[in-house]
Amino acid sequence: MRLRHGHLLPTVLAVVGVLALAGVIAVGVTHLGFLRSGHRTSFVAWTLIAWTVFVIAVVALRFVPARLVTIIVLAGALVVGIAAMAGPPNTSTDSARYSWDGIVQHAGVSPYSHTPQSEALAHLRPDWLFPDKVDGTCENLKPRLHGLGDGADGHCVAINRVDVPTIYPPFAEMWFALVRSAVPVTAQYWPFQLAGLVVSLGITVGLLLVLRRTGRPLWWAAIWAWSPLVAAEAVTNSHVDVVGAALATGGAVLVAFGRPIWGGIMLGAATCTKLIPAIVYPALLGRWRAWWSIPVGIAVFGLLYVPYVASTGTKVLGYLPGYLTEEGYEDGSRFALVSLVVPGDAGTVVVGLAVLVAAVLAWRLSDPSRPWSGEVLMIGVTFLAVTPRYPWYALLLIPFVALSGRWEWSALALAIAVRGEWPNVDAYRWWLGGAVLVIVVVTLIRTERSDWVRWRDRLLPGRDRRLHVSSLP
Image (cartoon, rainbow, N blue to C red; front, side, top):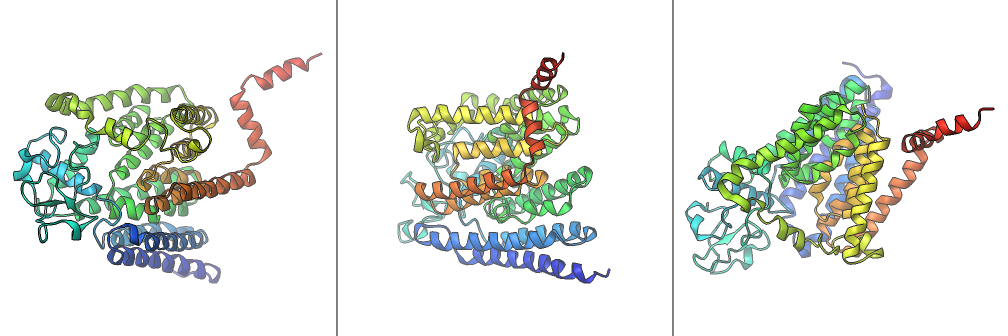
């Protein structure tokens, strides 16, 4: 296959760029170690370098001949994903809890019944999750491992919050059990990394299919496929949020394409993986048939809870209530932007109103057949209001950025990613402010007057008719 001279340079740049990105990711995963306070500058620098290379590679891909884009996107996604598996999790220990919950379930025990430090489950502890102390202490193993806390057997542990039950909803727990069912107890972090890569590649294929069906350029799929955030949080750190993002994206696509029942099933499962995917609903409700996805989703959500409620009762809430309090969502202290203006409990009310307004706008302004921009608005405004401190939450946003072409919202994902490595509230506010500036400026530049008129008419549907009536003689 020969390339014309004008296409050769961007093709080479795209290929070299994604290979360079894979190299940057592999070096970081294998050489930076586990995130700790003294290494935060290195992690931020690594993240910014990776994102710079990513942007260059995607921009070059835009000028690659269409017949090559699918191959390059998929090959690049595979290479970047394999690079992300080059080492163990480097900024989070959540997948250690996933592994433990899976191991516990295969022993016939509900993950909501006991805490990881419970002596009732001591016989299930694998050495790699509960290693022996070194010289009688876990100090040299921090922060990846820490003391178990029971004081009984001299073990360390890789699981965080060992004194509380699991926080994850039932479908997440089913995912943990499924992944661990195919490997021995001695298998460490790679099963969830491989599973995250498989799901991530599935999302890439899905995006390519939807983009092709809707007539949009296929290179947009690289926004997800090559994203450093996806590589880090879906693969290296293996967060279950990638499953929620996959189900939420698939459910939204099915509803938009006229399949509200199947879409509702996927959306219910997405919400039962991590609760946050519920925010994709408002942008989908422009057609009356789409409303069927709501009762279907609620029914699926409830049904997935049944086996765990039957075995554990009300304990299925796990540590969720305590987590919300710990994270500051109940008293408003977590909201980095809103707390600047409205501190305390009132901030929670303001955040709720902001999310409600975003939901109404997403519902009224979205094109029912292509609600992707509405999804970006809904998810993006929610994140700006809630200001999550964990970068894996942004996995839900990125597929809809790719589908909508609203690349400016990627600045929000970058701000959240940097926040995960540098937990300074004042700095986070500056990063979020920069993201908002990019979003607002690009939105104003790309929006034509006809778009404003169309949005006004959707928000005020009777306006044109009233003006027409008043102008009659």
